[in-house]
Length: 308
Image (cartoon, rainbow, N blue to C red; front, side, top):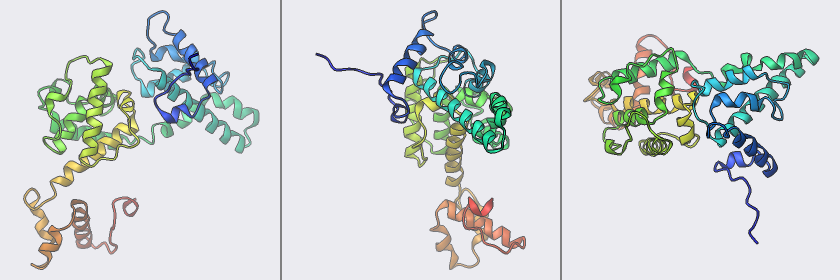
């Protein structure tokens, strides 16, 4: 007799959030949406999600649609079962956080009434405090360094005010190209799928290549998966781009490419010491050198807590 085979979820962190009974129920509901067209798009989800546990009579359908549009600007984009589970968990977490704060503040029935508008007050948290100025600087960097790329130039320059950056990320080509700008020759461009329209397997190949290559040049990618890039999740995309750009800029921090560093040498005895510093340490020394010249008394020891 064959053993029981439950619903298998490839992401262990998702598997642990649901019982098999819940997974089978959610899978059945999700599959039922496929009956008409053969696939599920994000515009199919709000009607289903508003009926699920934790969301029923708490979040109206139009606000669920607004929530989903932040990660999926194109409502006709196909969505997989595991992505649906992630969005369901995210929605539950936002509802719990909103209701918890309403109760703590003495909201009572009013808190429950206002909970349906939780998206309006938590959208910044949802996007991990997405900084528009930060995104604009990354977009400017990409436009400068990839503007003449034979494949990408038809999509550039990117408009920093919209979601074009995250849309371009979805096929994996842009990130692979950016990695090669940071560390030339990291990726053999013949391995990048560069058709105008890629199927899911080709996109996944590009993102796998991107993440493996990003890790190889020194990026931290433990919290980023291929599906996050396919979905163009803003906080994860910007976090990865910032690491790639940092590696590129620090690689140029040497006397040959940045002769202004000669100002750091007070005398000949300093030369060997400065040249032995890592690029980040050299940049810190450069920064402290100019702060001292400007009359600033303290020494900056890092680019995190000391510059907040």
